[in-house]
Each structure stands twice: as C-alpha cells, then as structure tokens.
Figure (tube, rainbow, N blue to C red):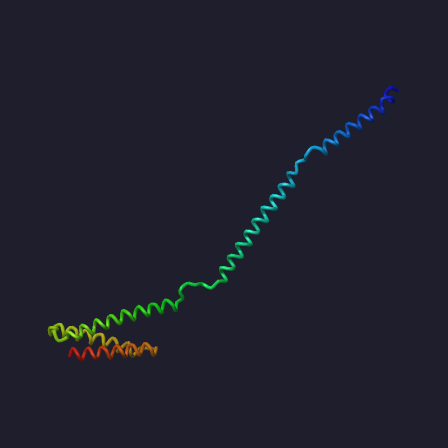
Length: 154
C-alpha cells in the first residue's frame, strides 16, 4: 500500500516531467532545413526562369529588327560606280595615247591596229549574243569607239 500512497506523487512527478519536455520542445528552435532547402531551390529556379525569359525576349527583339548590313543591290551599285570610274580613267588614257598617234613608229602602229581589230571582232561577237538592251548598247558603243580608233590608226 505504500505504492498507492506514493501514486499521487508519482503522477505529479510524471506530469511535471511531461510538461518540462513539452516546454523545452517549444522553447528550443527547431531546424527547418528541409523547408529552407526547398525554399532556396524555389528561389534559384525562379531566378533562372526569369533570366531565361529576359534572354528569350532579347533574342526575339533582335530577330525582329531588320538587318542593317549591305544588301546585294548596295554591293552591285558600288561595283558599278567603281567600274565607271575605272572605265572613265581608261578612256581618258586612251584619248591621251590617241593624241600622240602621229609620233608612233610604223611597226608599233601596225601592232596597235592589229590589237584594235582583234578587240573589234570580239566586241562584235558579244554584240550579236547580247540579251539585255543595256548590254547591247554598251557593246554597240564599244564597237563604235573601236571603229574610230581603227580609222585613226589606218
């Protein structure tokens, strides 16, 4: 019966221990490691997703812009202008040389006439096979110029 007399004391002691355990459990900070990791992974994922969205928006904006590089028409126009300058310089040089025809030796004059006839034949062939009206006009003007040179040399 002594055990029965000590029962209330034991119950009070057991409840006190239980209350102490609950109090300590509530007072001590519990690690939230799994929740913290999940939250940090979520933040990292959202940052990466936002960066990828911004980059895709930039790429789409760059693709929508028209290219500012030179077009084929620009390149062809530049080549045409440079060829015109070279042809004008060659024409001026030919006119200068034609002005001094009287001072040529007979053998050099014969060689120049032969060269002129060769180019006149080639220009006539090209004139016959020209498909474009502008090309035809250029070869016709070249043939006329070579005929003038042939007359001067002959």
